[in-house]
Amino acid sequence: MYLTETRELIHNLPGLVLAINKMLDKQEKDYGCFQIKKEEDFCSLYIPSFPSFKLYQNPRSHVYKGYWQTSDILPDIKDRNKKPQIYIKKKQKQVTNPKNIRLVKKQPIYEVIYKYDPTPEIRLVNRLIATCLKEKIEASISSVPENEIMPLVLITEDITN
Image (cartoon, rainbow, N blue to C red; front, side):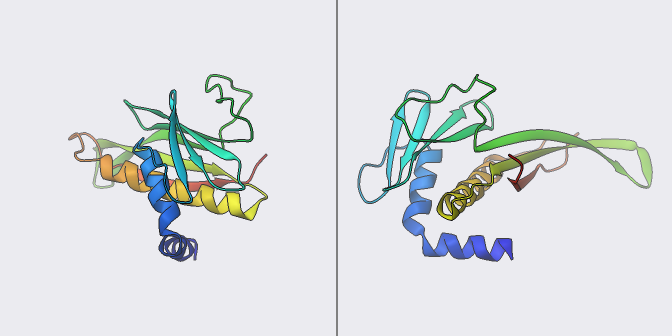
């Protein structure tokens, strides 16, 4: 049901999805309802009557950290007390062939995590951002080393506070 709902959201909110993808590609957008601005190491998404969403992306890896901000001050990504609302957790698991136990391959796992938000509108936008991030990571995987299996990209809603 989650996948069907998300596809329906993407279909019903094409302008927002376009803006989110521009934010992930670090492209400014200053027309229409949704605005994207580059601000130092962040790209910000502005939605009318919402706090701004600030996204940090490390250009060399799949490190993303997203924060909802009511102020114009950019978040300090090194401050461990300030937890991002959306982030990527990279893991790796060992996969063995049941017939040949010596054959071990690694499988990278990218987990796109978005925090539960009591505001349904922000939770919806978080889910859309997480889905677009998942698609961006999947699209960036062009080849896999011989000792690895195709990476797995998952989306998880974190309901803990």
